[in-house]
Length: 257
Image (cartoon, rainbow, N blue to C red; front, side):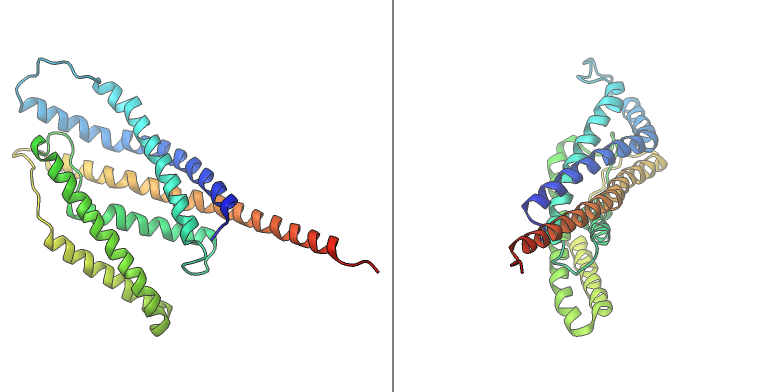
């Protein structure tokens, strides 16, 4: 596990990559997600009584500065969390290079935190969902996420034992299979939810969900590749500097003939 100074350096790099990821997420969401949201809002306005109150934030501001602020803040926060998790697992789970560790961590985080809960409770655009069930929908979504994380931790523990007994390849397959099985059971036990209004265009729903998932793909791809490159450069340089310092110290302490 990296030392305190290395962790600080990793955290800074993680947040910088998260900033870049936030900007890329904004571009992706603006290009692919906003058209579906506009169509969903148009459907809601056409099937709801006209409102006499002006919105606190205009739609134009929401789709530009509001969206940019949200993606950047989220990207920076996730970049910092990603860096801290990387620092915790690097050198403890296998002996891979920083690039490989970061890439693997990004894939695992995307599947566990995003994909598994999304498959059970996919995101919906405006006009889809009852306002009275927002709290309930949030609770069951995070419950599904907790099930996925718990299954991943159980699979990780199983992976360690299975690798010792069956080897790396078979042990990995067993762990992955156990995770999929536990998540599938969790999905079956969790309640279903369908609040799509009649007449809502399924193409709009599909486009919005694909855009939502794609935005997270952009985030974790950027973190896996970008942070992996910076982390490897940083850790390699820090290790080289530490080795040079030790060599200089030993040379200074060596007796002279």
